[in-house]
Length: 93
Image (cartoon, rainbow, N blue to C red; front, side):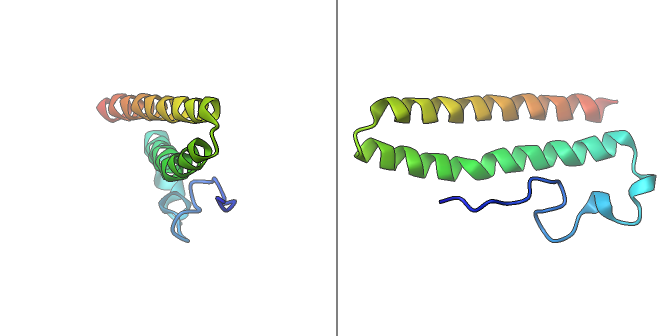
């Protein structure tokens, strides 16, 4: 089962680039870019769990559940594409 973890942008490595003493010097765009990166990585980190549970659900004969999990996976992938597009736009500013 997936362990509960902190969803904040500072939870991944025990330190946070946006939480350092230079936070005041960071522009809004820099902070938003860090958040976008975090959200993308967070969504991708769940893909392994989704696949694992979809396989187990298939073994249990839960075909409709598998379909919904796979649909959710596709939506997360589409969401990440949109977040990457947002990053590209942000970097052009």
